[in-house]
Length: 485
Image (cartoon, rainbow, N blue to C red; front, side):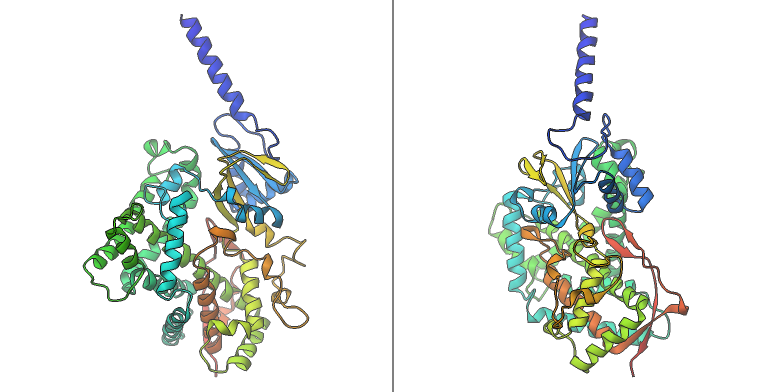
């Protein structure tokens, strides 16, 4: 009896091992899989060697001469797609609209896979449509939003004027400015300065912690019981609690009508009171978190990269200023001016190409078996989309490693090639806050260059190398803002 049991156990283990290292039929090229771990250790070592997961995976794809890279991380089948044809398919195909149903994703969403960023199916469709509609109803993407951004610009100009006797770190300005505009539409008011600084610190730390903990907690969620601190689980739980308290406080203020402005939270609470099944305070809380995360760091990072590019390309700064001066004079910039300030618009497109904020987009969960570039990808696989590689594809861009805004201007002086840019994704999962991001980046960038000339602090040129985690950020730097006379 014992011999039979042991034999059966060995057969089961052997079957599991064989199945775990056997790749599906017509699966794309990639490294060898090992029992239990897949190729996780190789991906981890490539990430460490090249400084980011995006660059590590890109190197692997080149080694295997493929635009569809097949991996297995723990028990999760992961495919990374490259090339414009493939990433367009992944961005727009309905079969790619799912999100992974993993412990790590649930941890990101405060415990459940809800909200809009990581939800899918009917819940995602209903709430994404509701969120976009209600934000537009209260002025998001309209003239009123441009006016709000202009007010924020005036505050930024005032801050620089009071502090331009010393070097300024753009990180001390941009994230708070973006957050105040977002929070006005979400919660109807600005966040007090101390609470805002605390929230931004939390979001920055949370982003770094997720980049650190992703592998551990995604591939082996049980490790949170054995190594709660080392795995990053305890840290993320504490941060989730603190962020929840901030959002819950805003919801409580709306329940007692302590906020005057009509906003997204009021709109959502009306649906809750109407007993609509999927409209719960829990869902509201995660949507608020989604909106904060999606808009604050990405938009401010683009602006910080834009000012970095100005410092590193001195001759271009005067070209930018001359266009602004000739077209606008002293007029306050607005989004409509982007069509008249062609070189400025080209410069900002080049910033978003050269410093791709989300070089590895996703993750997506395949809702059915799908063919990509001739390879068969099984249903439930996780798909990552290498936007960064498309933004540096020599088949699309001449001299992609050079910073050249002129690549976006044709012979007649009009903008071109913007259809090859994917800073906000594409398709139905395209970033719903792109109108805010575009307007904010343009108005603030133009408004600052209109008033100030940027110079390197102590003559030291900041590093062009970004820090790439879940998103890209510039290495810390300061600049001197000299008033234009």
